Length: 512
Image (tube, rainbow, N blue to C red; front, side):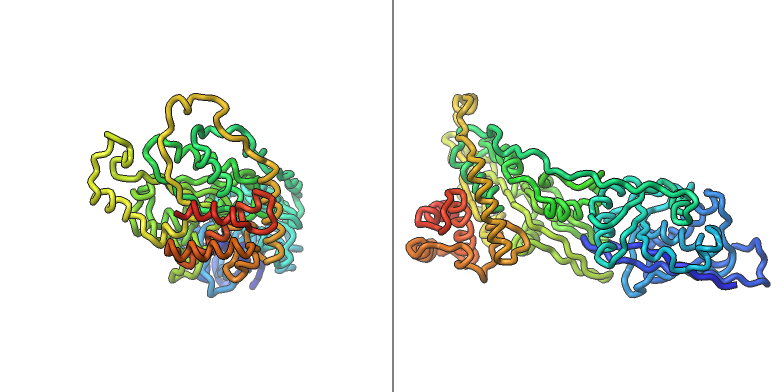
């Protein structure tokens, strides 16, 4: 007797997913003993976790009360040329085996394509429970793109899957739950999509940073336009405090941004529940490896720069990071995306981040403070050389931070008032500009070079000042572009449609 069944799963590659056609073929010969276990093979480039899934699937099927079919059982995962990684295909394989063996009724057995319009995901345990998987959000989005409108997901992944409009999600706890629903023996209730609202904006709240008006001004500009920020100063001058406050200054996530940021966290297995409500803030330790910071591994996974997508990546004690790790940041910071090529394929991870670096001015940290620094000029130069010129050039705002007088630090009401209306206006103009120019991210820091200066709209005298000062200072081409983008944000905050002379002057101060 020959029988055949199909189900649909998904495999994650980078932060995207592709659907997998799970094809189950069962051949049982009358000459074989009914009690024989036979052969169970999985083909289609499964990884070791998926090959080991044969024992998990067999154990789950038997524990739930079904008899595992005997005979020649072959599972093909199509497309066969794409590698499948992880245990998320356990559930669709088990359901296909049950359908092919007739365990779910003759009606299902006679319709091998009955579940083709269902996405099924889940890792099975030996006792039949369904464990959560990584990348469920990306898988449901991939299913929607090809017209699959129903999904069976582990309960812990159901909330993120339900956030995708147009797909009805059902949460399952066990293999029997999934089989009972698909065979209509025990239908499940769909998971209601939780209404998504961003976390309240904390930007207008009083700043914890005191005695540093220039530092706060730079932070507002960076938050408004997504500009990278480099802070250099002695310990305790407010660098770390400002970096953490910067994430609160940034405007709330839009729904589209929440989906994009949540997709990365879902692939990393860090999304617990629905979509993210706050912009990510990541602050890895300086001992983090290159793979941990920019991504990698086998299979490739997102690094800290991708986990901070559309949020803040804070690198404290920047010169203490290994130079090779810092140099790996240059391309993803510039392009907003990172593509990792491996023998198993290519994986792309987004990296549109606001990069904040904090550094001491010398090894002891007190350079420039009278009677405290004992570092030689050579030691200071060697320490600062740990941050290369090309990486430093990618920071739009480079600011020295001075120590704060203790009396000023303890005085309430020192921080200048935050102009919330100016921030809202600047963000609204950027969104309109991004839509007009077809930009991927609505940040002035991401204005394409081909649209400069048309996108920035500088006045003639402002452009003259930028060109003259760039020649005097020896700014690179990247430095000129970043200065103009920064001036565009300064003008947006001031409510000016065109970049004026004053805007370019302030932007040049942050580059020098």
